[in-house]
Image (tube, rainbow, N blue to C red; front, top):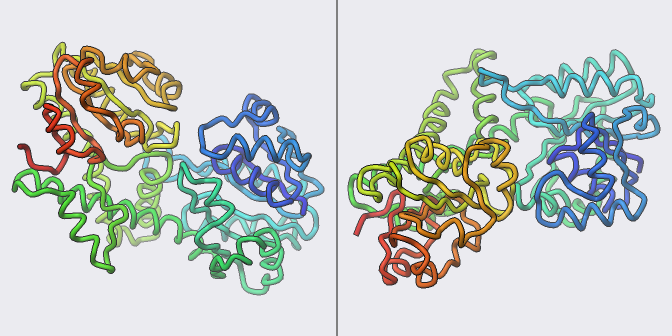
Length: 437
């Protein structure tokens, strides 16, 4: 099938490559010339495991091309809308500039019975408005809302083998679902559940799921605050709670909190939209979810100050991890990068490193001292702070590091290290929500 993907950022580039891998002929469209040139050269503008190989194979097959010319989509039957919906400047609401612009650019090039498939995360009510706009211009064209549920670090596998497929569609357009079924045939044959619903429900599935995950993470971080003042251990608490099948252990990991380009802005946009609809009271709890999450950052800085004897001035702090999560180079709203910057602003001599996010971090905070070398970051450090749980940090040898640092002190911002392992090697180990021994 001939498919276009409008918007070739993180979501769009992965989706385009995966659709080509499934055998479809795909043209990816983006307004950024530099990004398009890189993608056509087989270079993804972000780090994602499996993406370089997927992209190279798709380009080599001849089924995938990228362009800045929207007219290149004129022969496509299906158009996936994958542009970004960032948070509006100085507001909580989502900025739909890219969504609106993409639809306006696409309309003159739609075939009579084209199908537009929305995947961007948008405020509830957006799909109905876009559907009206599309049908006013092209009466036989149909919009389906098909939200994405990608996890950074697992985007390729999540696209090829999703845990569910959601189709939001208006009554009377059921035949369009068969086209989407054809595109996702391999996943459906593998037994992936397919939910057909209305526009509003399809839009809400993504933001409601993100709000739930954010709430679960902030809940355990709230418990970490209680554990710190009571002497309890939040990791053991989470383990015990996780045995309850109604709760589960996933996302009960206390630490520095969530970040990235989705969860923070999505829950804020969800609150803003609920307010516009007159249901703001229903989501007031999300304000505290957001507040707890942001409070983790300042608490981590406080913990660094504590282990440095009450003052950060002149202390060399080695920050390990800058991406918002491992297996990603994404530093958007990254708690780790935020803490590194705060430490420096408060007088610490910070040297930060990350396996993949150094370049992106330098763009955000050009004054931050960055290095690609773990050894260089920790040499002479008064304290090490693990702020992103990359496997290479989790598996560090405390005896080997001991000869490099000035003081054997480590702050585990993600509760990903073994306290006994580090303490038995003579280190002072501190973590959020865990007792000080």
